[in-house]
Length: 245
Image (tube, rainbow, N blue to C red; front, side, top):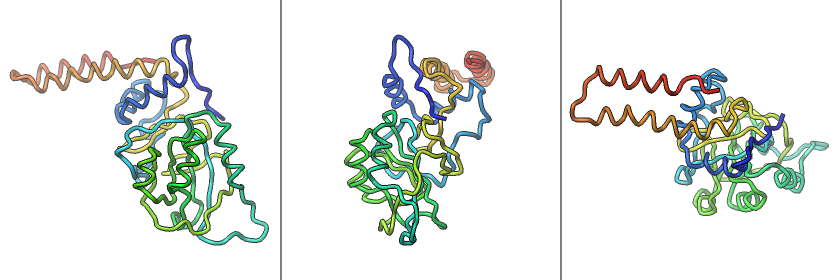
């Protein structure tokens, strides 16, 4: 099921996305944790998915999903999704979007769908980055374009890469992702923002959470530090930031 963007009278969905780009992924996770809408280990990709271009900072957008193969040439009668169909799917999806692509080959990453040409095309279609258990290449050129890449490692060749499914649930980094899921990732990894937390509640709370957390950091930097005072400030922080949905 596609996520419906959360808006109110004061901010558009694009405003929320822009705000999310200013928040590092671990802090967003910490804030979401306080809403207690899912187990703390859910919604996160595992460490097989790495940011290949961490200098680009935060990536966020709505998932557009696909599956690819490429280790072997196409078989007779094999169903292949044409590039045009893939591009049209991305163009008509809510933007900004993030391609989340499952490589079905065993082992994966024997081929590659993501390089400078693909990045140029998908950027033009409203896509800001790609996440895959498959391959990615042309890192410096893609970085110059500002297109995010999350994958296990760079590869050299594209082999026989082709899309075989679009707009279906995919599993990447041990996480099932549905089209329309709100993706957030940076140099620490990738997660899905749960539907249950409205963005018009989440975004302001992140600001409150950071301000509250800073009281702990400030306490640790004071010349007259003691553990009793630290415990009191930590307790106050936990009280301020609990139960917000």
